[in-house]
Length: 329
Image (tube, rainbow, N blue to C red; front, side, top):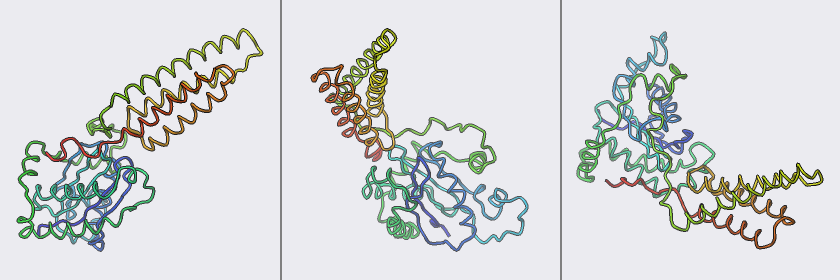
């Protein structure tokens, strides 16, 4: 019988499970398959954004058992051959994975994952996903997974409710990568020291387009960093010439330089806890300028603090992209 057996939603950066379907838990064969999916979920960033795995490797009757144990020939086998289909959108930092029977249509599998993706994007924002600490923090999403599974396990009624033409076209134009035995073996510890051949293929988290105000803020921040660096070098010269000079001024100048440049980095690249890191860098800029009040006049201090606040605001406004550019293609 052609059907969806299991589905889960995971966070790409660390494989943290966010939600999953809860039925078929009594099936030992599926439990073993899910163990491999759990290992795979922690390596999603090393693979292309759309992958699939059919028969052989996840054949609980034969090949899968050899991956689990070469000696356990008496293991109970009571599930049909299944295939694993996984897909995740790197720009959103979330992966959507499923297990289905071997004869389940490829287009239906990825259409199913696409529905999960669309609903999850609408229901949960990126900030909440990135801040999740506990497994299955969004377990309530299981209700949608369960209802969607029921629909996709009834192909006759399903065919009249969804349009698969777009998905068929997308799969033809950009077919999913077929995982191999080498891929699964590497994930399960057989080739742990081998560097992933997919490193760099999966795109990083993308930020929204840079605005003019963002460019100005970044340039001003670099300027402030350069001024701090220049004053820090001069402070070192003063310390070497006059032992009475306070070396802490040198530290304050260089910390200010580091904070300004780190603000620029946070503006250009995505980072976890990006807004919090930016605020801490701004706090460092303020503290350094407070300490340097004897060496700077009020206008200089105000300039440095204002630039720090400006780029902190720009970092907050430049959010991660809500959808991939070709999401609706």
